Image (cartoon, rainbow, N blue to C red; front, side):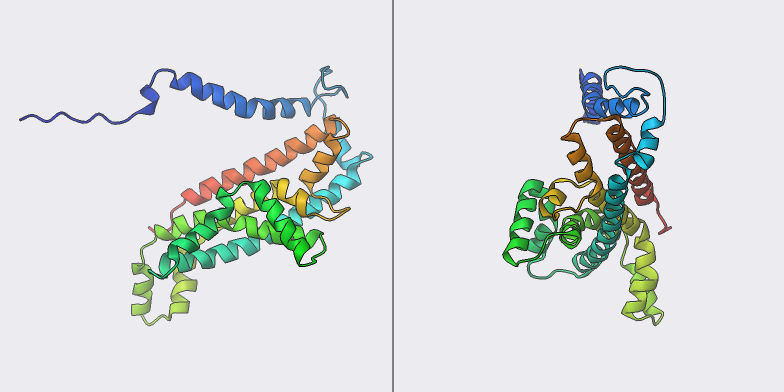
Length: 272
């Protein structure tokens, strides 16, 4: 009795797939393209095109609002670097316990707690963190932003690190211990180097999430403390200016570069 060969599922074969894909890409990226193009407009008007110019990029660094944006950018990058470093360290330890720790009670619950910030709406997390800081009498400022970002970035760093560790067989560590390496040496000299692409990818992902965050930052920041997203929001409330488009384009460029590096690093394989 002949058996029919099962056809492979190919979503691209469905009618209208290409048109829907192009529509989705247009809706997602057309506004970003408009902002990028008009950041090079020589005119101060958002509706009149007077040619290509870098005057608004120069205005970001030398204009009347330059000091405000420089301070906000400095805060954003310092917070993002520290938050990404701490959250990546915690995520690495958590992934080691979850993946290499074997079966233990509340393992599923632990994974759910780590993933919770990804599933809960960010506005809910922001309100919860704000209430927590107010309830313990913690003055809002740079430190509250940093602590909130560390908590929020842990699952973003955890996912690529955990995925990388799951793809590494424990035979590497066992072989090292067979050659009289201690568990600590097997972890630091064997497992960590093999995990490095996932760790770097997790760090970059956490960095960009912290750098671009607005909702949580806006809730927990103190008076007079600004990051780049909150400074942009404050400036937009007074009217959209071309220099805001220039800042947004530069921030978008940093995000694209970081995400691209994270993607290629996560695809690298040094276990061969």
